[in-house]
Length: 492
Image 1: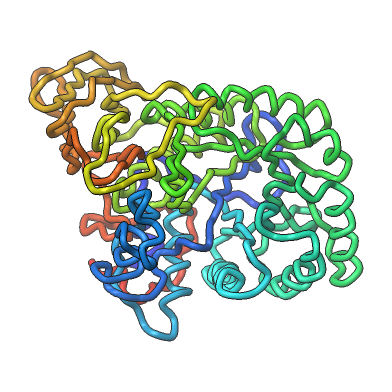
Image 2 (image 1 turned 60 degrees about the vertical axis):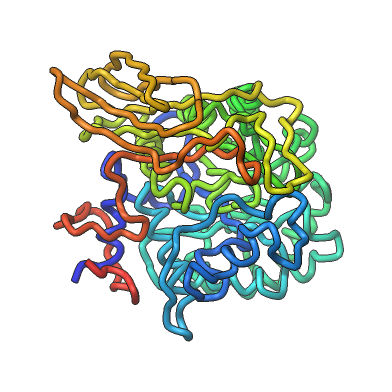
């Protein structure tokens, strides 16, 4: 029976790179250019080990009436979720699921998770330790960087945070630099100030004998970097989620390097938050491609923002709405980021992205609080995009409700847009009059949605199974370690 790791390695045939040893990189192509993905513990593959038709996502998060109706005004907390996963063994299902997510991420060239620490006790603390333990048990080189959340923790949590890190130090999967320092990358550190964090690091060193490589991830880079630079190994920024707001990434990288610091670039897909009533216009995949290009131009490390924050609609992880398409695209760019050279396209593939209704549509299901465009976002637009990765030039046709838009596209990566309209969406690539590859979006566009859903959905031609089931698979990359098979998977 094939192992899950081998099958998951075939999720992303465009590009698979060996996991590099942890360490600090330098601007320019380097094996030490690391790619992390921000992990948000409230949204694991399953919260209750129930069948998908009746689990917590379906029952409470996606249903506008879920969680005692507290999300009814904005149409439900979430618009997307992880793909359905079968229930597992009562004693091991949680850690098994974390291993699946680690292997999914690693299959796309991601080196580790930056895990949001929302609490020093309770369920989120327990999930953090299970994730760290899962990475240690897999022993595939995937690491966990700790990310205390300055927006949620309070100034009195310093001692508890020291104790928590001390408890986790027994796991070899925590990310350390080559010099042994522990990588800690707090979110919104400016809320407490540099002196608070310097004191916290001193306490950690005194009580547990560990030195920290400090990588603050700012909400406001320009207002904060001067204060934090003296205690930092690298710096980062949470970033924006639209092309209009993402132009600062390259300038921030240059500033960090002038200060003698490494730069961790935020790479993002989109952002749509029903509960907060705000969204960014990502222009289909433009924001994703732009932030990756900024990283390739000047970053040392990357943080994908986020792996699985479904409440903000920022997920890269395989999902019910986008399958594995975003991981497939990410694999291409992680390889490019590491080598400095676009990897060869070895198969023709099309990725179709679109919303399921126009941006200005008014929902009919009783939703009273609507998302509005963030002030500094790109303008809202209604387009279908085909992101083509082609081995040779081809005619690409996108059909929206029977109306065709055709354009000859070159070999490599290109895009074709067409106006969004109610109806079905299909894309085709043709050479010499013959169809090379095609994809039908499973999502019908409507003029009057029941609830407002402003996230883009992605569909890949010939998509792989999100949990690695590929009956045609015969081998995986020779340079990837292969752990023992996990329960419930490798079922081909």
